[in-house]
Image: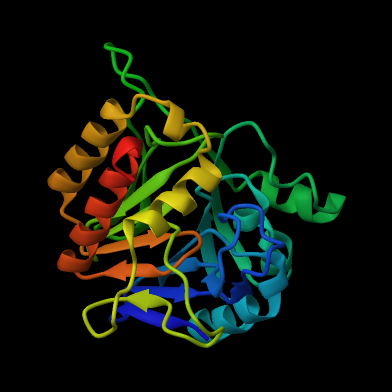
Length: 275
């Protein structure tokens, strides 16, 4: 079931997956349930969906979208990564709703798994997003601004902390930073548990938990000099001061005190000798 994060401006959709030893992107021995997230940003009659969730949650995503935008309604989609946990539900969404614009990056074609009819119908609506470098070679330059609706944009950039081509999004209207496959450490005890960590819930997160999830994806971090990553991450959060951190999987972090606490966990995790 979807959860409103900011009045009628931002909603999280999706389901959860059991951490029972079969999931490769979490640390060995992880337990509980991890949310898989898609986010719907709304501005008037305009809608932008960030990621589409796992294929196993196809029906939840489709039914939630039908409730939120109406059967057959129009929606644009932005993929933070061209990986299956982000793009799996593109084809069923395209079969039931009107995809107005599709924003993707990297070299992997999200239409590869489509039949020919669906691929041809959507090709003209695709917009390629690529990271731009400054004259100093800084790959963190802003890559694009996606219009959500009149007067509201999603700022998109390529983060310093990444493996494959990855994009983060910043929605100033709701104070939300969409972090794709980073800050994924929040898990639930039950499949129907609270998928948002805020001031109303007991937060038992530890730096060891954050580090475990981070190293499961970025296994090279414990052997690396992470000073530039820490500095970049600190500067990013200082400049934006996000109210919400919204990863593609894991619990949403909501509230500046909560966000800052988890940022501190992440900064400590990027200092491996301290963990």
